[in-house]
Length: 244
Image (cartoon, rainbow, N blue to C red; front, side):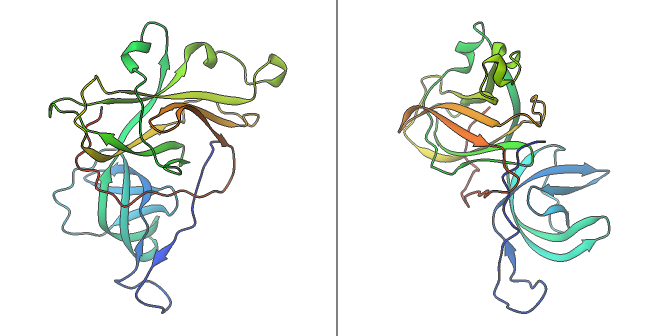
């Protein structure tokens, strides 16, 4: 019953013939790494299971459950037990976290500093909330800012029932702690939060996300539960983000 914002598998190609060519490549899309023995595959939110056929990826260290954004060249459909065989062109690791409980005792730890997020760069797909934002890097190279998706402990205990006075939505907050350490240098940040442990039922209307925006101050974004919507990931360099 998880909400899933998805996009149809889209290709850009230099070849109009049927099937795939070496010039076909996917748009950046979200996926989860799955390790199997001494190999790995990707469970894409939009393409299904992807088996990498690259022979030059000895540098890559897969971590089971790691969220990534990837661009790939599709080679074959229905490749054994996998939906596609692909040649991975680019892959970026996203900070992968779960939803954490927010209490009066730990609220200061999570902070509530403003974040800069472009419209449309918060999406839900594959049972995850995916966020691309522009991080104001810390001055201290050893410091990492903290970004968290939290749920107030008391709201988690309230039944999602209109008769009980609730609006039928799961209420979450995006919290950011920059520890008063900002350099003024902006880089792209990438984080994906696992929503699968939330108490989402057939009666749940969706998710309401509260955040402190650099541009719009305190805002609340509503994600209605829908079977098919648009998901996008910007083609940015995420190699310099400093997050925990």
